[in-house]
Image (cartoon, rainbow, N blue to C red):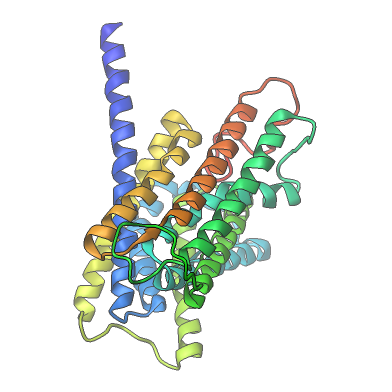
Length: 351
């Protein structure tokens, strides 16, 4: 009995420590991406190299572990779903997200994805994939949480755009001569649009997994298709394919991409294992930690500031996130009230 208790305690420590470590990795990745783009690297180039690295790393595992789960025939419906997921999740989402980082800051960029659970709830509700009863307490809390998430995102966007560049402190007090920065407002709009695309993409993935129940294979295939689509978009937009820039050689860029793909794959795999052990709610609750870590790293390494108003917006967003996650967790384990989602609660995409 004691041995089992000690094993459970060690497992809990490993899960919590690992989830915090994952947020450190995500925070460092956001700061690094912001730094690379400040040196002049195109967002399309980053998307192409990093996504192709993901395809190379995942493909062998997908073939070995999931080959038996592949569909017997490739239908037109499945092809369209794969193309939409690739375009939305790879080309559109990552390009918008990277442009948003470039115009705002890594801290704001890591805070915005906390909108996703609320937006996924709205999209799933609209598509009748999620049951909602307005008279139910949990449904009311999810609606209120979603409203707080959106309000927090808008507050953070406006307040971040008003930060004075002359202030060198980590937390900048509001100034009398507030002038909104047009570029930062556009950057925040990019990030909100990216999260909206991501949320729609998650719902589409959830429905696609019904016909293609192999998540690693789905990720590998859509990564490859996404690389092709992104390269075509860059060719049309810039009339050229950019394979590097003077400060970094192609070989170094490939090395960084493979390393990033491996680390990202390890983080996603650990999140999946933790989700299976303790559920999706616990995993999602660690997302705000990544924002706090990013703020600290950005201040130490890049000297970036953040206003009190932006922090207030982040607090509203995190509060709304926890409202949605708490209500979702309660609904999953509710008995007989008819409000559970039509999706399997163990599926990580919508749970």
